[in-house]
Image (cartoon, rainbow, N blue to C red; front, side, top):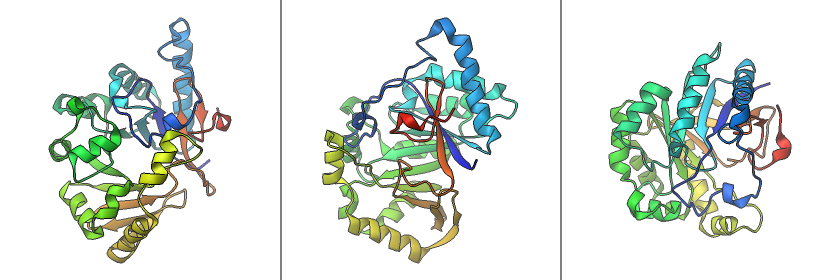
Length: 288
């Protein structure tokens, strides 16, 4: 098997109500045997660690802490994961957390660095220019709205690798393409993923994406800028090309749900039911 990464689904809630939320497009529910089946907790911990080891045995080096919500909501689970990972004969060393940034303060940054051993923070933003616009698209309550400039400065102060995951909403349509890349440089981004939003079916979220996703013209302008200002760094196992642009590693991801598999498994997904899947939106993709 050729697996690029392992997505760890952190159970728990979410302080946001993203208008493009993929999790709210689907009705599939997966049992939480880690936190809610305490009678068999020891058995499910063993199952969970078996799946972690399986991913490592099949050449997977990267574990991404993510979820159907905000992973930072569930501190206890993240501490458990760090313990399980450390007990593997070959632990994951390359750990990334995907977060909206809500609740991410200096104390949590220190904890992520020292206890969980996260090396990369992937900050998911729907506007990289405006705090209010970002909060609006992400459905973030006013009391939890993040200060993007201050937060990225703190992330860099703790010397994390900073990935900016740009949710490609229509805010990009109004901004000159060079200004987008200039802003990402000023934020201190080491890596950038331009993420085309997913829309399928007739859900409220899918309808919003069709109306407010970045236009095809904008996506093409970003591609053209990458090609004209960057140099290729190589093709990822799934066929996506990675470029170096202004000293940032850049990927334009037009298939965030990994619908197009190109000879490799883009990622394995480990859910709290202790099962591995190859697709986010299809329980029939169960692998182990």
